Amino acid sequence: MVALTTSHNLIKVLTGCTASGKTEWALNYAARTGAEIISADSLLFYRGLDIGTAKPTKEELTSVKHHLIDIMDLNESMNIAHYVTCAKQIVKKLCSENKPILVVGGSGFYLKAFFSAVADNVDISKVLRQTVEDKLTVEGLPSLVNELKSLNPKGLGSLDINNPRRVTRALERCLATGKTLDQLALDFKKITPPFADYALELTRLEQTPEALTKRIELRVALMLEAGLVEEVRHLLALGLRENASASKAIGYREVIAYLDGRLTLGSLANEIITNTKYLVKKQQTWFRTQLPSHRVISVSHLTDSSTLF
Image (cartoon, rainbow, N blue to C red):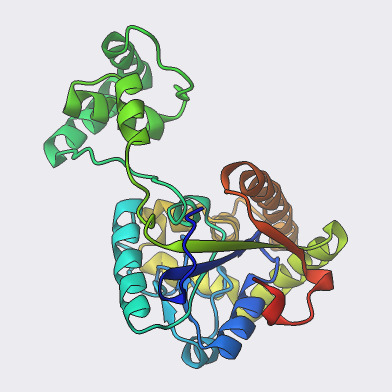
């Protein structure tokens, strides 16, 4: 982390897995300190994804100023470069106004952007991207992997060659730059993190396994009671299926399966709960291995938001 201490360039970050209580404690902290919240949640960008994302209510969004929530329609897509640009503009403005900043979220890639470089500076033209996509469609993934291997005689390292997205992105970068993956990796290490000029304090909330299970079960029950199925039915009419991030998100994908007749209503809640628990395990592993040194607080011991940081 950057060793700066003035309040004018301090960003506080609160994270934790799904159902850990981030929203509740973030709102409490912001109300007490006057902080404004910047979302680092990959689904809260989209208008209409309310119930299934446990998005803060209209009252909560009114009581505390939030940023990067409800900024895109379903037919738009967010990428990390655009997110970083938006977040930097907001942070700069809030710092100039001497307002406390609280980043809140659990989406790894967006969260990590505050602590390290997460995107390179390679410009991929629309023509090149379409060419690679067409080759994937016509010739299949093995053809892309073979071309990538020919451009990287020393091997592909840890690249997941069974992941079409990772293979296409790697091939695009090699073709656009004329460099190997090893050379691109060296270039990436030289990139200055986007928030290197700011001090960062990170806290992660933890629930006991028993408490987390109960919270997940209650969360799913409340979502279904609040009209999750109706929300998804409405969003499908607006193009939900075409938004890969949203349509494959837990809660939405299960309801889509139910509406398509691939899942029964009686099994819907359990399916969402099971998949949420699996996601939580992945999140917990990611937090431990990908985030810098940070403070971990057990929510069961947390009585006042003043002790969050």
